[in-house]
Image (cartoon, rainbow, N blue to C red; front, side, top):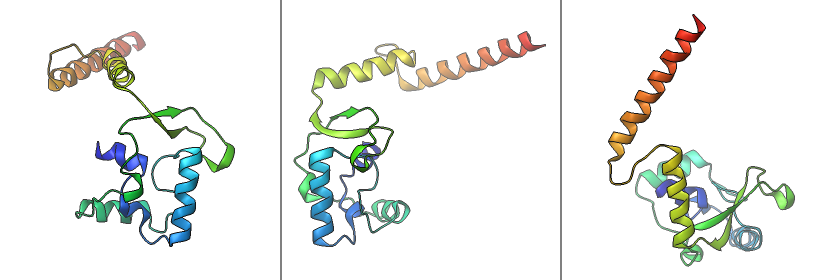
Length: 141
C-alpha cells in the first residue's frame, strides 16, 4: 500500500520545500486534472531524497489529501494540461466491487487459485517459466 500511496502523491514529504502558493497551485491542479503519479507537480525535493526521508520515519500524509478516497480510478494516457502520457490517477472513488474485480483479474492473469498461498503461486509461476524456457530451448535446437 505504501507504494500505491507514494504513486498517488499522498505523503507530506513529497511536498517538502514547496512555498504556500506553489503548493496551493499544485493541489488545485490535482483537484481539477488528477495526479500523474509519483512526485507532485513543482516538487522541490527529488524523489530519492523524499523516499529516504520517508524510510527514515517521515511518513505523515499531506493534510489536504487525507479525505481523498482510498482507491481511485485510473485514466488512460492524456497529453493535455501537463499530465504524463502513461495515464493518471483521478479523484473518482473506485468502489469495492471494482477494486475486487481488478484483484480478481490480476489473480487470473497470474494463475492464482482461490484459498492458496502466495508462496505456492510464486513457486508455480517460476516452475511454469522454467518449463517454458526449456521447451523454447528444445525447439531452437
